[in-house]
Image (tube, one colour):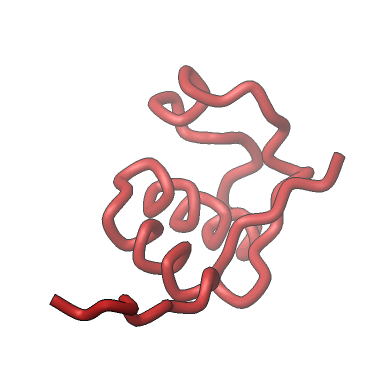
Length: 68
């Protein structure tokens, strides 16, 4: 056991969480479709879970940001 665990950058931890979380993957896919103007609103399964407008969300470097 290491006396001092290796620290991972926060961004790396967040990106790993995106890979493991189904909702995050679905949101990224939906936002990518929206950038191509295929869909204007969240798919039904995401809309039930979220109460935010899709037009206020954007992808920056593979991460989802919400503009208030």
